[in-house]
Image (cartoon, rainbow, N blue to C red; front, side, top):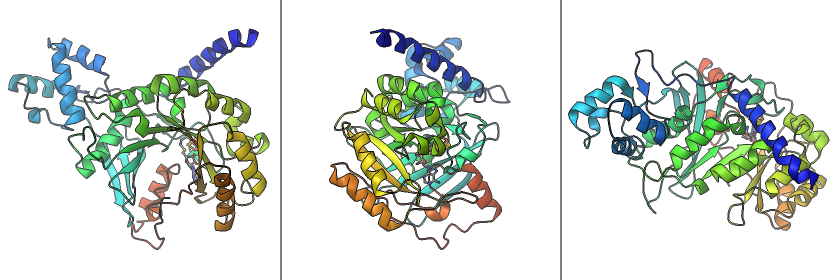
Length: 405
Ligand code: SAH
Ligand code: SF4
């Protein structure tokens, strides 16, 4: 009884602490050097308030929302349902922004990687990973430039957190990726989408940038704009337990957990956040995750590190951990990077591990590297790209792209 009274307060304190820390790394102002303001990333209420400043009624915000997020238009001139004088007025005060594209590369397996540059010169990477068998695919989006956490197998973890990405920058990664495929206006109803799912698995820890991520997700899922279902969005976290309940109840997106180890002593090393929120607490938060069900399973990501976490005993312990949950496991062969301490598990070890999980009744796909020759693995992003650019990397290099399973 005492627990159930004190726990919510502790969680609220912890949430407030995490959000206060996020505020120390803010995104750039939406106002450009020339004084115009970017409309992308504003909530509907904020857009209504902007238009009120021009003496315009709320229905104008509805029209703008349609042009920006449903039609994908970036020029006020093309917004034909809005009168010419108002279009001119809008163009003098506002922009519909997109990031600059520093690099765009398409691998032989059609994986496409973008390096986007934002207004302050910071860059983040977005990857489109097509489903090989169907006309659809996942867009892997970044939530921060760098990361405060330092998971020992992750290249992003070697980079300091530079800053959080703003809602505008998160939404516009998706919109700019859609631009490159010309997928506008936003497909409605059952019309298939090429860019059909979003995975927040790029650079950064999305639950350490909760407010901006939440705002972006609310824009992307708004039914009169991009209108992507919350069921088609998966947020990956290294285990920021205090924010997981809010994520489930407020955002209702699918959850992926970067588990990577089944014992605290090892997870403390691989995912140092584990020292704060150990496995038992993480699993408890997964069990109560409001948006999980048999049709919306929690994905446990498990990077396979040779001789570190890939034994038969580890696989059995993993099954015991997730036994009572609607779960699936995503086995990810480690993607080495210069200076990394680990090696990729052997194919045999990965298959043995997968078989144990499958025998226990859990789906256990092995996520093979896609677009490897353009270094498209989510989680090892910007600095790699800079290295690649410096070396004039050949996008059609030797490394064969492999299937995503
Ligand atoms: N910070 C969040 C989301 C970004 S990282 C999180 O940790 O969940 C997303 C995923 O990238 C991680 O689960 C991890 O599995 C993967 N990843 C990072 N570095 C990797 C590497 N070198 N090889 C394979 N996967 C890696
Ligand atoms: Fe950050 Fe995720 Fe990389 Fe860990 S795995 S360092 S949380 S981006």
